[in-house]
Image 1 (cartoon, rainbow, N blue to C red):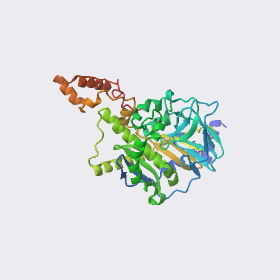
Image 2: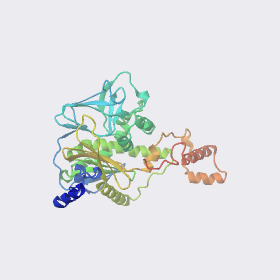
Image 3: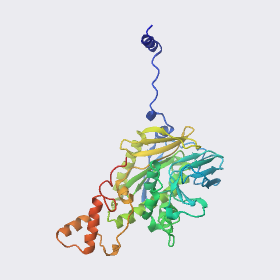
Image 4: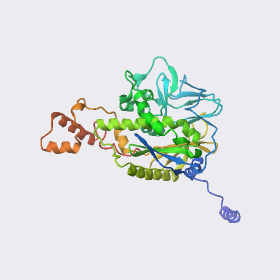
Length: 412
């Protein structure tokens, strides 16, 4: 019998075998976890607005040790690292250790940031990727003991480190946090932010007003959607309420720094901050945007990514309909953590390049570019205002501070 006819006969007799499922459509513990999530009432502080993300029922406790609470963990610099600033993590805890992307490690011969989530098995020593958290001038002759930072890296850094980890990322960002260093602290490292008394004072009211936030709703709070300066900046989900509690304060501190840094930089760069005159309208509008983000993530295409050598779990990346990217990690059929950072042109404009205030900043009254242009046509500008307007024009043309052409384009 003709082979094609035989195949057709078998197909009719036994039915067609199911087609292999496309990788992008693979069932994921992360997608299962997303089903039934809802957004609760938002809480506003001086710097942030945070919405709780609630599971339909309290998730069962995960056998995962959060890195922020772990005590029996050793960090060291490998003798022959696969990449220059990689870190060896020895997990002496009884369970799997979760190191969250954005963790700041001060110590060694140069401070580091862990760019992506990693699950380290109990009793294992795993070399994980890290990137520099300080410029080359922060290199030490003698290594110091490693210490975990009390805050995660700010969302702008975490979002870029997740998909494009480079050793120039944090050093290029250094000029944005120099204002927050303690007196006498000359470090240009994110470790200086963790040690900042000024930042701790800013965080204190926020922490007090949100102290009960993760403990409400009978343990159903599994995530947060955070707005910084009236802009949604992240969706963070954890596999259970305990993991959220473990990272809640480091998250709050990182977002408080982001809000404060935006205010400082916007003032120096003459960029108006969003108005928050009508708190109720602001809250309602942000809740709608938060729901839109959660809905987009629920409909996103997930695909499995590579697992770092020696670690455990499954790694997932996804993209929403509006091209927002995110990443998640799961283990033994349970979602462990997800982080989504929507692209924000305003924050990109502020943090996309180094920023320096004019030397004669105190002599400037704050006139906007349009007003300077109008007075320029009338020949009424001072010498300083002429120089300032010239800088603004260069910025708009894509030079100078990097706020012009291309500054607001979506990353590839």
